[in-house]
Amino acid sequence: MDIIEESGKLAKEMSEKYAKTPPFEHTELIVKKGQELAKILNADIKIVTISCYLIDVGLSKALQEGKIKEHIRISSEIAKEFLKRFNLPAEDKEKIINCIEAHHGGVKHSCIESEIVKNADNFRFLDPAGLLISLYHAQETGRSLSEWIKVAREKIEEKYKLVTLDICKKETEENYKIIKKFFNIIDI
Image (cartoon, rainbow, N blue to C red; front, side):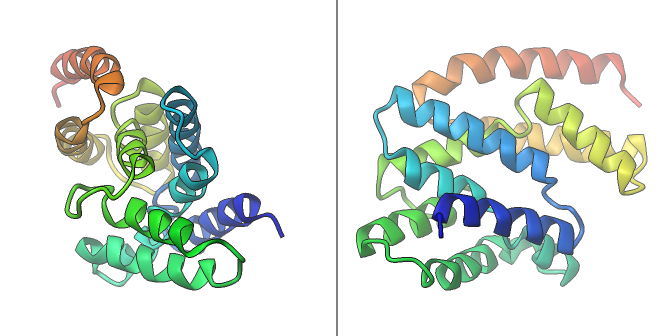
């Protein structure tokens, strides 16, 4: 069994099983950005890829259970069970769990892969493609445009503050300014 392929399958299954949150297209965007950053920063691309797939694997479940603030804990628990199926070194498993638990900044990074994953996750709302995916998903799930704008504005501010890698700051700064202008134009 290929752990990367299986982690992608799990992420997709969990998204589809519950409320399609996050939409799997968002997860794919995070994975792509994480892989790009891992190559540039000479990090372990396997750990980054697996972690990007697993960081929000419990988000839909948490949302459905009314425990959205616990989604990191739920994702971590699901990932720990998932990782038991694979013969990975304990250090790799610890890094993956740290990537999950630190991706919102509540836990310190124990490795560069963790910081990469956190920054890759921020692109979900700081990238025009990520915003369009979010808008499509909102429409698909019945959320009104005004509701989507409210949530998107909150997420943009939250994610912008979490960017820590210098390599990401320039790109997110440019995107942030463009996105803010866009929201000012369509102020509903």
